[in-house]
Amino acid sequence: MTADSSEQQTRGSRATEAFYGRRNGKPLRPHQRFLREDLLPQLKLDLMSPAPQDLRTLFMADVSKVRMEIGFGGGEHLVHEATRKPEAGFIGVEPFVNGMAKMLGAQDANPLPNLRLYDDDATLVLDWLPDASLDGIDLFYPDPWPKKKHWKRRFVSQKNLTRFARVLKPGALFRFASDIDTYVNWTLQHCHDHGKFEWQAQSAADWHTPYEAWPGTRYEAKAFREGRQAAYLTFIRR
Image (cartoon, rainbow, N blue to C red; front, side):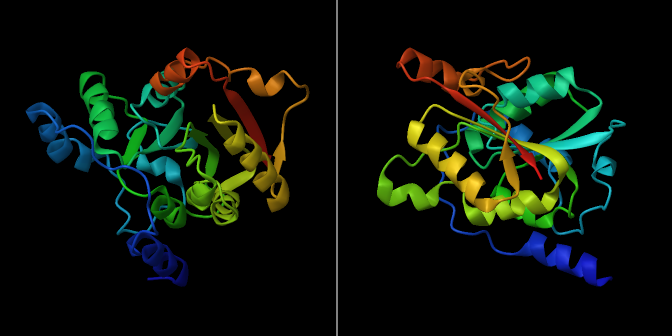
């Protein structure tokens, strides 16, 4: 085993960091439990093995680039993107059991060969991936931890931005959406302070303009019903 592969295996097998998100909701139905036991192992990344230097080999489809979505919720956006961009491979990470169950149901009904999944802490995947291996990272509507004493739990942090910077190719995009003003400002400030990410907004309207072919999410629809406005931030990896 080479030094690089040994390091990657160590990354993949380390214990998860403090994880504050919810993991379980309503009990799964029998078919959902079956998919979790049968289908998920077929799609789940094996972090106990060294990551391939070329992530395109992870997929059954012939893909030209690889993107990652962290915390995909029910999977609406991830399925939409993987369907409309079959030339790209997508890694979806969601530790919430019920969210993963929805994704597995969608994958069972309409299999997408350009999709791989992981059902635990995203930092484990980030630490497993090779340097400069991703063409994009999406983080949409993450848990905002609105109380100031809990802000340190937010996924956007200097440590995680350093993880992003390591695995993103130069020129790749980090996209972030939220309906919580304090988290939007937090992300702008953290990316500015980090130094490896440049905000791409050209006008005041840009950050309230949804991404191309944006399908929306169930969480976003709820935010709109409750009178909150969404912000859509795009940063380029310098």
